[in-house]
Image (cartoon, rainbow, N blue to C red; front, side):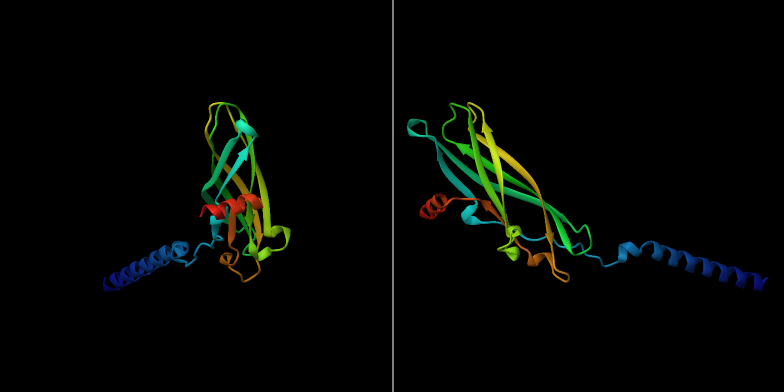
Length: 180
């Protein structure tokens, strides 16, 4: 009888050990210290956050004002740590002072990665067309774009900051400077 109790205690002990090892093995993913890989820092350039422009001639002038109001994004590393696919949703607000007619407004905005300057990948300009109906004073537009960023092996996404702003002409830049 004593032998049977000892054998049963050993079996229970071994079973308990197997259960504990099995549970810990199943929790391997929970206990791994894998941090998500970082996304590049995206910044709206203050001097290019907004624009103002007159459209038309004489008494039919329409004053257009635009502002970048928000940026949301996600990133993934599709092939390890050598490139980043960045998806951005950039929100614009466009306002006009006269709304007694239909109007088509075109503007550009840039996405710049200084690490690649002066290569074409260093700054890309995207064009947007906004149609106003008669009586419509302001519009919100969300532009969704994707950018693939090759990164050097051993580099961090933080070494590839991204800057976004309106693609302003010299007159608009000077007007903005005089405003401040």
